[in-house]
Image (tube, rainbow, N blue to C red; front, side, top):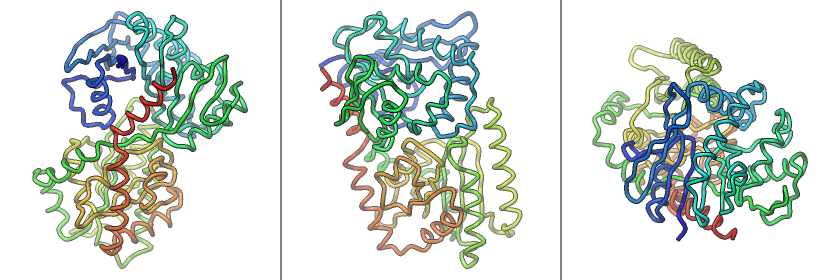
Length: 455
């Protein structure tokens, strides 16, 4: 079996808690085959980029590279998160067109290629992850790597017209043609990429998942990422004994819980969700005081102005909602900006009657899947899910909403809070059966199997 080389912006080191499903899946694949996980060390250093650190465990070599703070500012905070992130989430109005950061992004990808290429063997399988490293495959080819190289985009693929609006879009996105397999979250993402290739990317869509471009034939396909379903089910059951979960349950008294858990990001639709919850309180006064909404939104990218503005906006909306609707023994909206341990979150999900997952755009959204897997089979909660999340393509038994339709979100909350047990069980059963068949391990086996078929 060929050695696997995983390349990602960050590396989940052995000492770190692999609570994320992706880390668990990639470690499992690397343990099966033996291999290397390569990426940034997470450090912003002085004195220049490029120093490598190595550790090993379970047949896996972990190789991480330091980045000087200036390189990090341009590659990560700059082009990755101020240009590509908003573009890929359909927010052309927030795209930063600074050419200096674009050069820094390319420079860091060149450093990744310079360090990685000499380590590769002819029969290695290289799996590159996400928008931080789009051009890496082409750079490895330039350095003589001829083996199989695959790429997986974890975030959405925007429409062709949006991609075309980015200066030098073809110079960047045509580097994807150097991969043997490009994986996307949904069929819609595949269709939008094929449309870009055909209209602006200088390639030809052959059909059957194949594209001809830059003198090569490559494959594209949808590989919806998932969760470690059985592990989440186990964690959720065990979490009921945790003190934090018991305290939450006690604090609710006899009220139902609605929960949202999102990184603090404008793509998650949190202002719209807060307004939708307030609309629920106004449209359904008979339910007022029967349900508490807990929103956990850890701060991310705090140095970026858009994120600071979002935090202030949410604090203002939460204050307004509570000021207008709270009573001495009930606060309708609890807003928390701190991280909660993953295992504890599973207990919170199991406690909730309603899961609110309403991003304005999301590649997949694994919170939706974790919420379903965490539920008590005897008394499951109801998932309210944005039509604009990739997960909506699989979890069609959720209550699907347009996150911009505040009345629709409000009415979905009311429906979820009063849904009969038989209907809740029927909807949950359909979704959990899908997640048990299509878990994170099935995802990585499907992707790697398709990549290895390329030669």
